[in-house]
Amino acid sequence: MITAKKKKIIVGITGASGAIYAKSLLQKLSLVPEQIEICNIIFSEYGKAVWKHELAEDKIDDIPFTVYDNKDFFAPFASGSSKYDIMLICPCTMGTMGRIASGIANDLISRSADVMLKERRKLILLIREMPLNLIHLNNMKIVTEAGGIICPASPSFYSLPSSLNEIVETVTNRLLNLAGFEIDSYRWSE
Image (cartoon, rainbow, N blue to C red; front, top):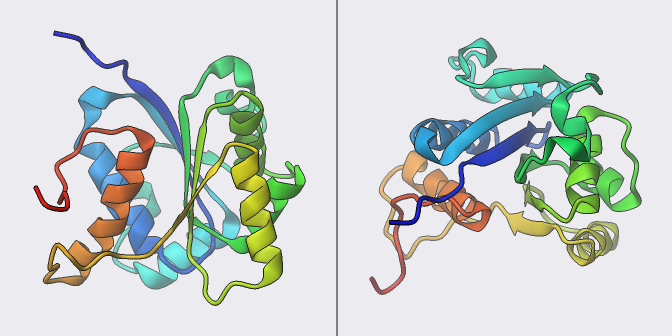
């Protein structure tokens, strides 16, 4: 039997509406410890504010992973030598994506994303915005050409979700599948 390598993962949580996606993602990651070597979290300042606004009952202090300050450039994953495998930004603001597309690494989230791209490792941005303007589309193109994956927070309905949480999970399950995690989720025609 071949044992899959455990993943070193970074999760960036920015100030786009959709903190429920980040909450679902962190819950699902906590259910697969056998697939994770380490999971570190970074909140932007507005990511914390949106989390508190949209998920008032859920405390940031209750997150079961190590949380780094967005200004902490001494975090291990601020350098490619740390060899993290995956970075998920969930949700990802258009401003964060724009800074990544432009190579502006002025905080730990954008620096970590820059490291993932330069090291040719997996970077996935769960964008949560509509409608999109041409600047957004061009930034998506640039990030994609640099090796990142743009994953719109677009729920699917063919699994017939019956609750808000099940709708959210159609997105976070897809995000985790893109990241290479083995999770139980709905598969079309299976």
